Image 1 (tube, rainbow, N blue to C red):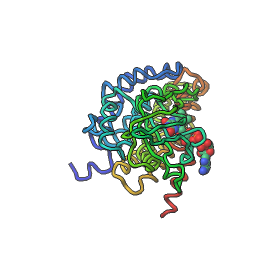
Image 2: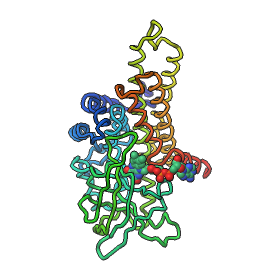
Image 3: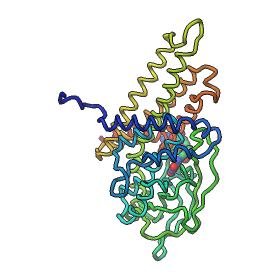
Image 4: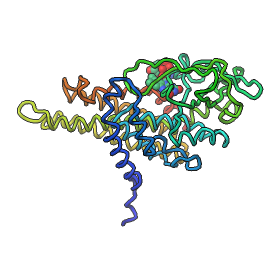
Length: 387
Ligand SMILES: Cc1cc2nc3c(=O)[nH]c(=O)nc-3n(C[C@H](O)[C@H](O)[C@H](O)COP(=O)(O)OP(=O)(O)OC[C@H]3O[C@@H](n4cnc5c(N)ncnc54)[C@H](O)[C@@H]3O)c2cc1C
């Protein structure tokens, strides 16, 4: 074997992981994807299959009962689940999003309280940063946490919380010092349990896509949690929340390329079957150029996603730039590729009889959440201009 055999390619264990999760997704997740979307229901079959096979939160370190898989492996799992069902891919994606703040900054005691149940799959965790009036402008949040003896008391409402109602744990950012010189330095991060008194889950949003993943408001009405549930020091919460995104934006990129790959695969099968003008539509060069462009973009985005995931894992200095660029490129590609897929299915693509219509609706959210693509461009430009 030459020295260069491992040069710039995925290691064998990642290739084997992809084969395993693809087989599981095709057999146990894809068959339910249309029904999950149509009924707007929790993907129970996918959840069960992912937990049974240990794919629901593979990033959790071994000392907390997890598998300690690296960031590229987590992306591969999310990508392959999204290729079959975008809603289901939010199970591993949001378990990572909710736990990274803990992994980055929580006390050992708090990690031991929360992480083993996520690793075991008995609990899920959500991430609550956004509010109605504080979306892109996260530092303007109003949810308050006040220290009262040996408890923090939370009041306020978070919105757009993915998998709320299904999750047991919630990583919540709240203002602890409204007088801080910089708003961002008056925010702290906490972990709230679904059974904490004063924790309320709102009704499901009625969405365009990812309909199997519930999105809800969560509210806190004098919700008292033990002092030990703060993540890190008071005032560090927003920094932890934003550092988290450097690790998880690549996972949204992975979700996006999974959706795009699913649409591309369905399109390649369809154009080889569909006949017009006495030949398959795959015979037309205009169609061939379209699928070539689709595959080219997916491949480019996939590579950037893995590079960004690996940079975050290593803690590289430019991981923020790479995370934003991977999420932004992959989600723009997913929107373009799924739109072209619908186009190449013709009228059939516009119906719910084929999966590309669902994939086009599901792709759209990847341009919006974990920071809109305008915000990603702001992050990238800031990093470039800082030099
Ligand atoms: C289905 C779904 C699931 C979600 N899941 C979660 C979750 O689990 N946890 C969580 O905390 N949040 C979640 N979110 C929230 C999501 O991250 C926000 O919706 C997103 O960050 C945008 O905030 P906003 O909706 O308030 O839009 P706004 O901030 O109001 O933006 C509106 C438009 O203005 C643009 N804009 C805003 N500021 C600027 C600027 N400075 N320069 C240029 N353009 C700008 C935006 O790009 C956008 O196009 C979810 C949202 C959805 C829809």
